Length: 93
Image (cartoon, rainbow, N blue to C red; front, side, top):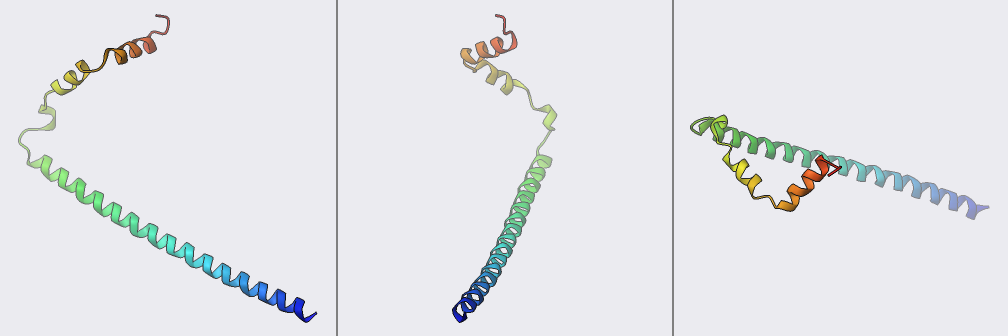
């Protein structure tokens, strides 16, 4: 009988310790998530602020940028892509 009680007591202690370790792991993960999220938020915020200041300091406006690069890129598309687009648009052809 004593060995059964000892086994149950030991098992209960091990389960309690396991729960405690699990709680610590979850807490550490949440702390790390918060740290990474804060770093990402701050880093992206700095990048966006830098872009904003650069754009504001540029002469002219973004609307003034010519559309030629887009037209050029369309001309550089392979003919196979154009054929695929036409066949998707007009399936009966």
